[in-house]
Length: 351
Image 1 (cartoon, rainbow, N blue to C red):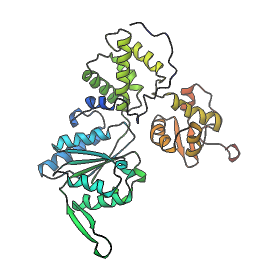
Image 2 (image 1 turned 45 degrees about the vertical axis):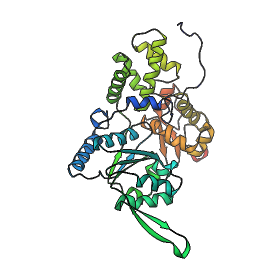
Image 3 (image 1 turned 120 degrees about the horizontal axis):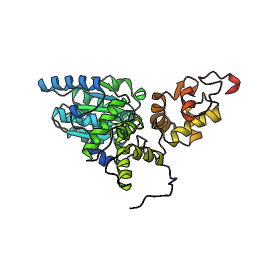
């Protein structure tokens, strides 16, 4: 097959952690046990202790609260916990639980020791959240039977289980719900060494060869996010195969990242546009989240959940009480000259 000489100008959002493309293929790359789970060392070590002692006592593991940006492995870790406990795994998301009976149906079907995973738990409706309180503490459900004067509350017993709740927005989860979780795990973006280990492991599972320097660049360009690096690895495999290469080489990765409009820090076009808009339209900031979201054509939730966490982690963006501010490092990365107001030193008349 010949090499393509044309340029594809269609925007590719392959580094967006929320993207659902290839999720089924991700399943083959996901670790199944803690020993296979790369990174998050301290969290893994503590979980290993908690799981081991719970199994020794023949008890359910304490309810587990997972916090962190998308794509870092919250769902994967929930499945790993179930595998380590040798327990069943039941998965849902808060938006899917529309009515209390939806939750009741799931809880009453759980077997002893099952792991019940709720993604986006910050989006639970109040009535459903209140049902969870008793289920988590007393392994029961209070269900109202009848109407009017004849109404009465019936306590339905459920088998001991482990609730695993995952969220990208821990700050808006209610205090009563948070207080009922016995274990809290906070995910952080992965270090370069861990990302390279993930690339190597995934390449082996995909039965594809990748050179060490190519793996290093791919890891560096993946935003410290396993989901992103696995997707990029598959795309580099495609480019290598198309070019007739027997392995993924450094030139293949450099060319592939360029074609996908991803730079050396893992920023895609929209990330760079966000930084440029703050610089060019708002003199580097500060600018409020709502104004910025409208300017870039995204929702505030998308801006805060999917773009800002990595930009902040990479030191390119800062949050302040007055709004978002682009850092000197961002100016250097974009090849722009810093304005005199970088760091939020604008006067009131400059805003």
